[in-house]
Amino acid sequence: MCPKSSSRSESLKKKSSAGAFGDVLYGMMMLPKETEIEKERNFELGLRVPDFGLVINDFLRTREVGEFVSGALAGAMTKAVLAPLETIRTRMVVGVGSKHIAGSFLEVIEQHGWQGLWAGNAINMVRIIPTQAIELGTFECVKRAMTSAQEKWNQSDCPRVHIGRASLNISLSWISPVAVAGAAAGIVSTLVCHPLEVLKDRMTVSREVYPSLSIAISKIYKDGGIGAFYAGISPTLIGMLPYSTCYYYMYEKLKKSYCQAKNKKSLNRPEMLLVGALAGFTASTISFPLEVARKRLMVGALEGKCPPHMAAALSEVIREEGLRGLYRGWGASCLKVMPSSGITWMFYEAWKDILLVDKGHL
Image (cartoon, rainbow, N blue to C red):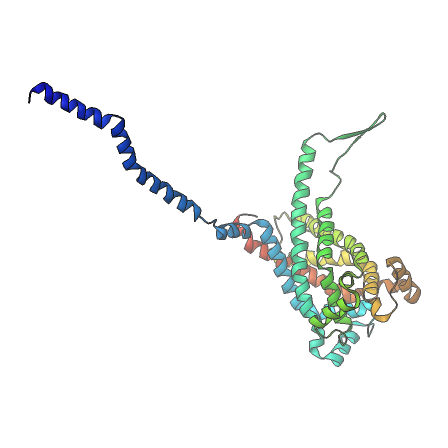
């Protein structure tokens, strides 16, 4: 074969290998591999599952969850210690049995034994865990939100309201974030946990009628439906508002003033106990007449003479017992409220140190 023919045949081979036919063959040979890779990728994407464990773990490590858990633990530990004082206080406030602390204490032991001092404690524990968690958690969240809003409001120009020629500046500087947070904490916790308060009071005052939690729930529901669990919600909110506002405001004010006077950044545990007790004493003293009226309304149905509203309950107490009747059971209430407030704040701050400081939230 001549060199020209050989070179021509080689050129034809190159064209055939590099031409359209060669490209098609090459593409057809590569197509199954590319399709297989795409299928593998789609298969991997289809089986990819979100890491819920990581999401839950991140949520549980947030500051808000730590504060709610700290409140729940503090409330449970406090109630476990002070349940007997709560029983005596409730009996004296609603006028059941002796009018004296020692006499009421002995009456409970004679009638029901030592376990009678913990009457309704199961529902008390069930009640206090969500109540304290919601109350303290709400207080912290609202306080931070109000403080942040107040700072942003003060940094910007205050809006003005024009009424004719008069111009008024609207400022939030006079509002206390702590007082607002305290009021919000009391209202929210009351709305959520009021049915548990009704159950606890019924089981404490009428143990023979409501011997267990299940019987109390079924009997109250049978007598009045769902609305029976919210009996006395209006006076409860009226009584809770001044107490909760004063309670949290006094604690923060006393804590801040004490730390400034002693040139300290924070309180130690005994100081928390003392400051919390003083805050509880002040709040309880101011709002106690409303507490007496509230308890009278809540358990009045058991005696068949429930006053129509809080004002009527207050006037009824004054008419029957005089002004001193508005503070009947105040001593027992202070014996319960002061250690309860102090121990709660001590445990709450301790649990916050454990759950939040190590995570860098404080």
